[in-house]
Image: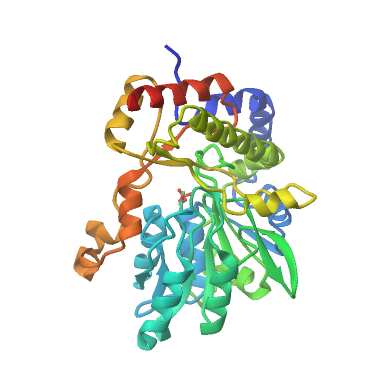
Length: 397
Ligand SMILES: *Cc1c(COP(=O)(O)O)cnc(C)c1O
């Protein structure tokens, strides 16, 4: 029987293995084990790839969020407006600082925070809006949230915007910049953006890592200080920080992988298009068994002369009938599939005593109940994609 795992890092490693081992050996032989040139170089290259002035390498995507929120001055009594349908780290970083979330329901098409709901929430309670220090949209599954409208709303209320771009490095979205239409990459859209180099992300290290990108000199400077225990100069502390440094060994590996990222993004998009076609051919869309993900910026991208990364498909997530049984069926057929995320954040036990459990975000709850992520990694063959769709068709027979 064919086997199609959700992710196959061995397939990605094989052609790069020698180069990676050499780079890691270089770091070990150099004895520069903390920050240094490797980290600085990766920061420059990621920032330039994203179109920002600064990149600050940190220990994980989670620490990127935490350090950036600290630099933006978030603390006890502050509110952070965000989505209830994301990975726990988005919320965790807010709660760890003694701040609280204001949840806004998602758009059912993109799974990203809904600008319409956001506008309602901001307008409905001026006393609450007054306390919102940061808007924290997540570019879920590799597609940017509607940053045009989010920036407009946040700007109107004078609130900073931090992008949780952990799943979306390189993803671009169209935006109006000084009257002109432009494509900008995740992290260059808000005041700052946070990336994760967790191995399952499109750009993944051989362990944990993350980065914050931004254009603002002062913010980058503050984050650099927070990254090293708040010391500036070393051993003189005006602020509390943490040990949030990116490991140079990870930086050396990521540097090699960064040069392949555009090709990997393209391969994931190609796989998504093959899935879309196969699901249509199998009649599974027409009969309502499967709803394929929508790349909402694709139409506009295809009109442009160059090839923007309108979606980087960190995940290919379908809505299906009878989701849990399908997942088990696929498991038996050697197909990896995963539920991101089975419990929306307002229903998590960790916020039980904050009263969020009683709130209702119908679209986040529906997404949590209906969605399933299928294998989408770049090295998949068309034969493997056919196998996945054939098994799903078999399930719905
Ligand atoms: C992966 C992820 C994070 C956390 O990144 P780590 O590097 O695992 O700490 C944060 N937010 C989202 C949306 C993520 O997917």
